[in-house]
Length: 610
Image (cartoon, rainbow, N blue to C red; front, side):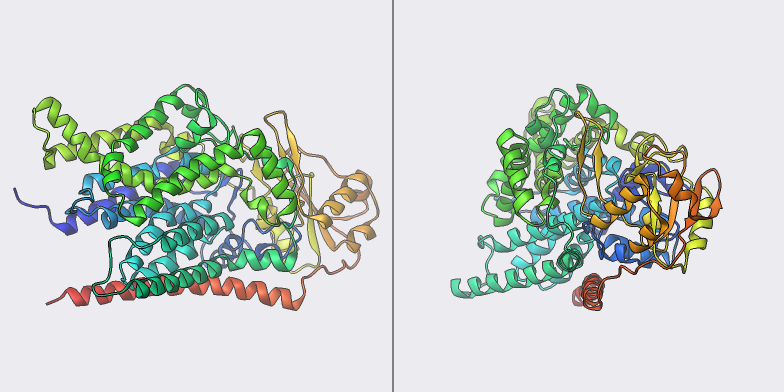
């Protein structure tokens, strides 16, 4: 039988994963902007102090907001966000396929399983088409998915580095920098990278090298990896350090953000099936019915088929490390949702600075996905052998039987979560802002002071934005800083209010609601007050608002100018220089990694030429 050209097999993977990514985002590809729960995109955003993380609220969207502000000065901000989201989904699937090729090559030798293109496509499907991706999309965590997408590339990079291939370092730098778009992504990718670089060497050794040399090389690679991880996390680490925000968290957030059991599944079962997000409203419809149990069984069965083959490859330190991480990524969040686990989490939030980053426990289950993809890919040959044994009385799989087994497994994974298609059942669709937002932006541009926003609260529910609550778009729409308390009201599970970090913002909010004088606002640095109509929330004090200068008023927005000169609340020069330098270091890491990958690929191609 004529063998398939290698270039054709390699081309199938990016083409398939790109199509799958486009099927997932679906209607979002049309005109308009992503505005769903935590996701906010606008035509243009600005490089304000808040975007850099220099505010009294926690630096949760650093360097994401600064990066989008820079990009939106060149291209439409909504297009930039959509492009990054599609690229993240595409990179996640393609990276999973390449990860399988790196660890389980098509012509593998025992004890490594041999995995062909069908297995690699199944690995890509498991990585892209699962409840974790669906729930994070519905929660609006588009930027977290860049960190998720970086995980298989981190595995590829560290595998190359462990095999003494210098081309792994630019890949690792690129993956860590891309994951560093959000703090959580940076922690996920950095943790995975350091674990894979730290684990002791397996049977893969350099000919003639001594144990001493290998230990020295191991220390060196861990040191370089740690340095890259620090640079990737520098924007939010430095912003948190110089602003002092996020040092303490509200213990109520631990229970509110704990992993949640889905129908007919305990918390552990939900997490094992890559579901269980804290927000019961950010879940695909199929996961709210007993189908969640069936779908989880399908996914775990596909993964379990490859466990015997993966077990035979246990001498590979990377495979073993991925298996241990997968188990921990399921077990630890499940334990954190128990009574004593919640108690430990509440103590940690109250006493450990920055521990609030850990409170959304389900997001860490992303670390299980690389192993799931590997095991699923290895299971294609097992499924093919079972089919041959049943239908042909011959356990030896053929290329045709492997292809058929891959198609069946891919179909099963897709059918297990049918409402991920087309924008998670149409929930992921673009919105169109009223023209009033452009007018207000033009009015405040170049003005003095911050913009306070009413009604009180962080989330909105506009008639034009859909049924789901959305983050207030004002902080990203307006060219001036918008103080935010960071307070979150959780509506389900009995309801709870989680305190934020913005002390000055909370004082401004109390003044706007309880009443006061315009001079009180200027003393707090407020130069403008924006009232957003047709959304629930506590309105402002009418007497105070009547004492302000109304400069714009329509059915969507009313803008007031506060008389007087507002007090300047600006970070010090040293703090600004430190944060900007950290952002530039992160950008340099990303650009340098990409250029290094391109240069390394070019050298490899030239070396292959006769």
